Image (cartoon, rainbow, N blue to C red; front, side, top):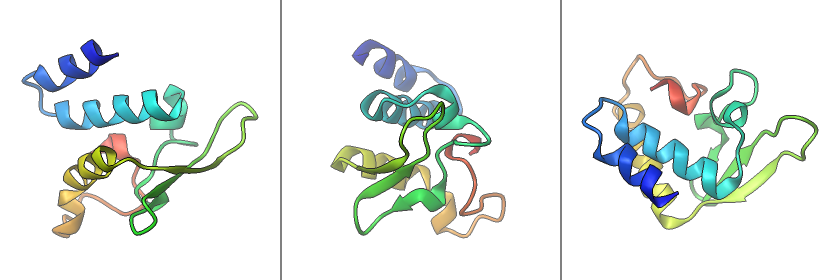
Length: 101
């Protein structure tokens, strides 16, 4: 897994930070692709509870949805990824799926 994460960051691609963050969250929280980026269940900015250091994850295929704790490095990565939201960038909304940035 470390090789995949390193490869995501080492790429000179526009969305390498976003890809790294999503892959890390998928690995640590056991997310299916649809639970990470899907239109129905994908990770959403409004599911983040910054003060509580948690995220609500909507599960697919009959699994139980619920709140997951976020580690320090996950919070840092998400805050860096959400920087356009903090600046009030009109193209980003609080209910947008994380992967669509």
